[in-house]
Image (cartoon, rainbow over all chains, first blue to last red; front, side, top):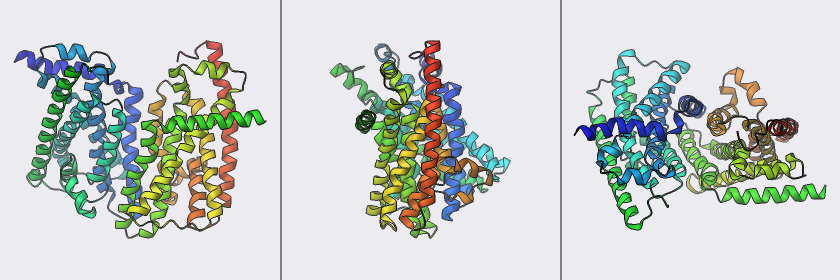
Length: 262
Length: 257
């Protein structure tokens, strides 16, 4: 038990620090601190140009949605990065429990994503004069935690695919773009066609974004508990699927002797 | 002159082919602008401005040209360095500018995929009519925008090379330029202090020329300013490229930075 916990916490953090080159301030600040603020400003001004929604709608939607960048890219890198570093075989030959080995790497990803979402929400809110009551911040933090956990589950699936596919940056960028459309960050879900709505309610972040908007408008945690439960359930399903994809890829790689080849 | 033109064509054609085979470039230029266009179509439709959808298609297309130029030209010399071809590019007797310029114009040219995909996407799924008010002007405005962005790429290529993390600079500049150059947002909506910034950026005049040619208006001035800016970028690019070359030779850091 102690070993599993050590692998989960210490191993996860060590792998994260070793494999995520984005932690360099030269990459971290432009990509994860400044870029989300400009994404928010872009959609706020498009919204003003198109004459739809309030600034608050876009600020909250895009701040939470941008958390998907660390959730997808960092999670993928934290696992499939072992392949490019030529260390994957050493990791997989150990008797370490796979659950703690893989999921431990998700924890720093969630913390990073929470920071990105909260910081961009705070700063762009200040720039644009968005009024979010101080009392709402603890609830918003919880909503962001659940949303980033859920999206990290999706990142785990990408990490599994990354054990076989080389162009993970392309895959993650496509998923990021799709989340921008389907999560309702910029277009109300009700405005989308029926088939898109059906997808929207089955992807991470959609319920989280809606919950964050309601909390910022004065709702209590109790009012958004169903949204939070849905987001958490989606996160559990994606995390389970991600873990299964990782195990499947590991088994296949052993069978085909293609662990570091693809 | 003929040799220079032949070199330009060969370099441009080779780089367009090379970039076309890159999944990342095809994604940046052909797929991502379609996502942004889709969001903007829904937003403008909801806002009761369906007549603006061609405006959105063209803006999203130009977003792709900018992304392609930014990532392609910004990382150009770094890529040559990683591939081990930078020494050859600098060592040949041909002036470096004649080697690099076709490459930067190629990165902007690949952005034309985004104009094609966003126009097709809008026409197929959002009933965006593709009716050009001035087809001849449009045929002039589009290549003028591409060439000027390619010349701007020359400035990016020769300045980003001094930074170790050129890609993070590219990430940093993508959204702000989309915003201040008015690709999907009317510049008049932005704070006044952003206007001088937008005036010195090629996408501002490029998209203005293309839109006025497509939607109606007098695109001549925008195209002329675009061409003038291109000349300024060329002069800056020649100087910065020479500076980089001299610095790299003096410090013997060509393949090291």
